[in-house]
Amino acid sequence: CPPGVTFYPLDDERYLDKWRDRRSSQQSKGGTNDVDDDGLLFDVIVFNFAVNESKAKLFAEELLNKHHGRLLAPINTSNDYWLKQTYKVIDSRGEVLWSAIDVGAWSVQFQPDVTQDTCSGIWCAPFNGFQKK
Image (cartoon, rainbow, N blue to C red; front, side, top):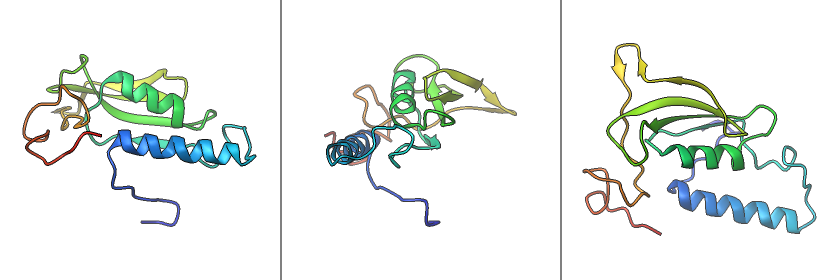
């Protein structure tokens, strides 16, 4: 990975817990409260698995740089419907800036979010060994 990129072998929910702990710790040590200068917010977040829109917006609103952050995700066309997604770009306010149902001739379908209780198929527990927190 390039120096500015770090890989965390965690599911998104465990990562969010770790991120919140780190942010809270930094702020309790007298770190800046300026949400763009604390070094913890992201310019870009890309999900490489299907998510519900509520999760995408949560990550965008909480983890993106407030001035220019963007999130790209394959978002379920209906809540908990894992068989069809729409690509969406979301800003730090949770506003959808762009979306595409199909990309060229390809329909958008990704593996489901394994942390969701509604996850079904071979990607999900108990088939993949994933353990919910």
